[in-house]
Length: 570
Image (tube, rainbow, N blue to C red; front, side):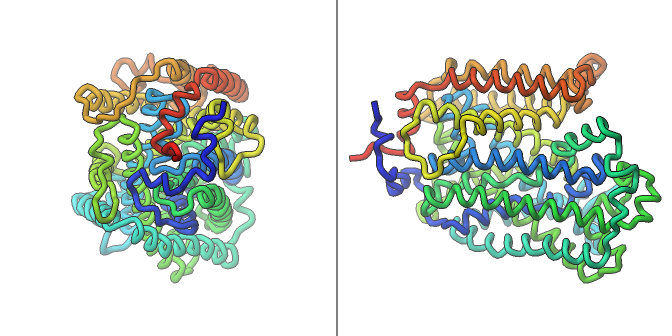
């Protein structure tokens, strides 16, 4: 039997205005929102961090990561066109598996988005501290902000809040100009460095292309994907999805914006990594004897591309890179504050957190409280994680599990709502959805035991906060807890933890670092050897995938949750 939702031809974009937000962002605004998020501090730092882990073979890391992220982007493209709502990635699991799964992955999505703005602020301040007049802002030896640096960070976050509160149209317009700059500067840097200061011998120096042999080299390649800033750098394609509730023509524009942004971003990053390796001074590599020891170089650690251009005598390029080190991170931080506020808006719409988070201003239709609280949460991240390197791990940890929920939602909704009109229908979804879930779990595993345990601690914290909202009935729309549709959730989280514990990635974490227990609970001990571990992850992931699909919400339950997005047609 076909439901009302299935037969709603065109899905009435006017009906989608029930979200309460202005729908005025076009295709280029959506594309540039994603691109502006992808091209940020990642291009300035990830190329350097990745080569200290994998050497020149980091190029392979970028290739593998790009394939994985493109598959996940294709999954998001169908879901984004199917449900063009604000805070989309926090709401897809809710529609497919109900409240418990939606709350879990929605929290990961919020945590990831809320922590990016402070990361980008830290990156801008760190790069600027290379100038004599800003040297007091950042203590490079300790990797922390000074008092003045913290004040600058607060002022930047306040600026982001003001821009967001003025309105999404101004945000879209200003981001277009900023993103155009952010795309052109890396391209210019690649061309200049390759033409003026390229050393082909660097690709076989410092221990060779595979710096740790075959197996060790493979381990480094995989580790760099999760721990070298590569996944973090490629984050952002979902920003168009998060702004789905404000898209003028979401059914047409969302899929194109998502796919286009990741293709452009990946190409820029791969070329930047190639140029970075080739432009390094061979004497610097020889001095440190290995790629890993480059991490001890103060100049490269604080401002990698700037230092290379300066050493090569390309002063004008070095100046442009320093300027870009402010514009690129600031532009990304601006967009991610917008995105995080829309995710909290979506969490409120789903009934997980107080309904005050979905209240919008009468004139601009901006979720004011969501924007303000998100900025405060972002500032709190600066306290325990006062450096780019420390905070970037938290973002990567949360993002990979956020992405892992999308293939599950796609597979479930293909079963429960096969006739629901899709503006973009992913070819081969029966293969791509489970495959992308397996690959997402690879990234979770490569991030290591320490990262995984830290993430589980934050999940418990999220449940506590949402539990308070539920206990005090701070949201009149709070849903029932869908235990049955989420019965796969506990085995999934526990199983990934067990595999990470016995695997060979990561040595410490929130659990592993607790006093006397550290000798007992330190995971990543290597008992599960490379290649065998990936086989175990693949089999386990496929078992969880099909278990989750079998546990999905029934069609009437999906209709009930989705009715707020597609109101019944007259």
